[in-house]
Image (tube, rainbow, N blue to C red; front, side, top):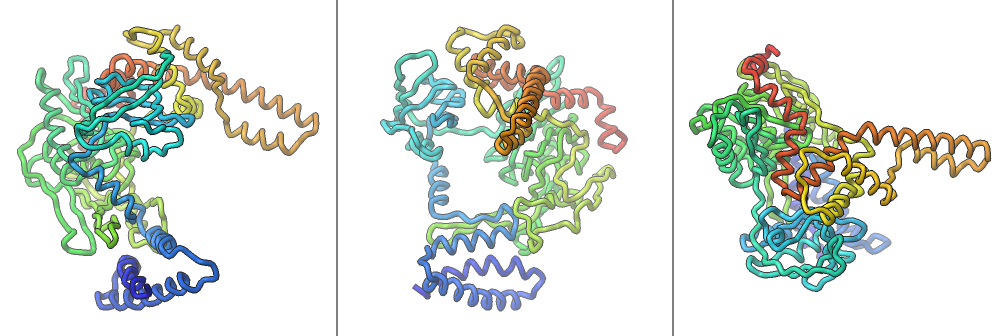
Length: 546
């Protein structure tokens, strides 16, 4: 057992020591690996075998490994056997599902949305349906991953769902055939502007075939009219495959330009990625970004910004400029480890200096290079260490506590479920006042409430003070808070109406119709259209004049 422990520790120390000995000669690193491995191995062995209370050797090691990884960046992580097995299951080409997005509310498994055109939607599954059982297994008390595992299986096999539906007295049984569910990278595209002269493409992730999907979407939006501009929406796109990001940039700039470089400690990880294809689209572009845009999204936006090919509009991106690979490890475990950084064409790093797991000893920390100035092809200043900053700042709507509570408690969703059961259609260009009044009555019936920070403090005071005079003052303050909450509802009315309207559009006309309607109510989309409406505006921005 002792020898086995020693062998299993070699990899752990091999990962630990190089990160803390950057700058040492190779022979120094290996000496330190051997030295510290010997120390750590003995400490681990002593604790596992001689500590006063019996310890779990595996848990002890995993905790030690987790503590070690927390001194690095948040993207270097260890995958245990079960996590590896789950990844292998989902990577099998013959593994399939039934096309549902499920959520959990009050202990029930609720269909949030069936995939449009998927097997569940074709069978008649609706948003709002509550799943009682899957192949005879009750969903009560199941974890999300357990529900997912039950619905997935071999292509062509069937699964039986028993559901309850609002307005229907008896449970309904559905037998659904599993299919390969392809999640598209381009989740929406359409034409915008007065005459449809602006193409819009929403890229949700950089999965396999992203560049091909972008090409196809471009062909679709330009099939009936000549485009004068393009909006590429990368908001909340977490990234994905680097090569797909490079191929997308390749559609918009001339051949022979560097899109991104990766640089690490090991020479084989240093690589420049260049464009090679003829330009597919040469009209003005606006790229939409926000704090959820990361990694490959930042490669695309950073390259198009540095090459002065597109106006970046929105909010500063996430700042995830580190490259990882997955290294297999013993006993069907693995480790995802950061091996290099991304650098844009101007030479700046995408990586923000803020980390989820910050450590003053981290070899990844780059505070000394934060805010260094670089220049785009036209000479505009861009800074390092902040992610990608927009050329045109446009902040998205930030919902207040009231709006967040309505969403989290599922009241939009539940009202739409009720409304759909009671009404045959919904063809309104905007939310009718009568429907909004019904929604307010629905909230009263549901006894909707939310707790503000002031109320939390007030409850704490009430618990500490029982004196009549003080309790009277506390009650008076509560009345003031209630009045403020009523005012907040009035102030948020337009935003609440918008969310409720889009929920109803989604129920009656489908997700694509809901997405089209949402674009027309999106302030950042309107600002992007305004930028594209004037070639002079775009030229001024890209030349640093405005």
